[in-house]
Length: 173
Image 1 (cartoon, rainbow, N blue to C red):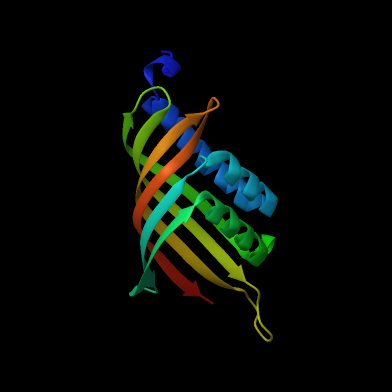
Image 2: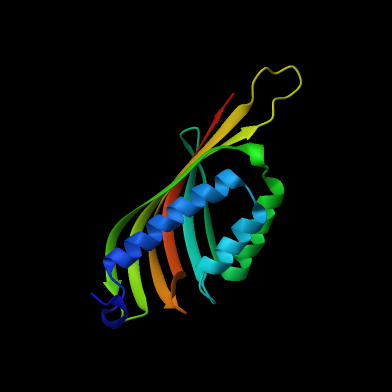
């Protein structure tokens, strides 16, 4: 089937979002802040905006909520900040998975996608004086999102995104 003539298919979207998951894993393992910025530039549509409402739990107790609206430029700046604050050895484990719930095509160059994202990251903090081992902070995030996926110049990118989810933070020594 010629998807360019019939719209974005669920299979096009599935391949794209699963590729995002694989690329995110590779980026976190390689830990190259410039690669993260390049990836962000390539995969977020011009004018993309993201609205996220996240509830936060630490060690099983509700500790707060975060609501934020970010545009592409904000995300690029945060990516640079993350690259500055984190170091190659600080990320001990990372995974990103997506479950696509629904895809609605809006012609040849756009589709609305409802998906649930699962992100798992373990930060390893350096051991302090007199400590034998590093401590870890694990962040497990699950978010239900609605994305506008666009085809621009023959490639897919993410446009407007609305997400609601929960981040669970666990500390261990």
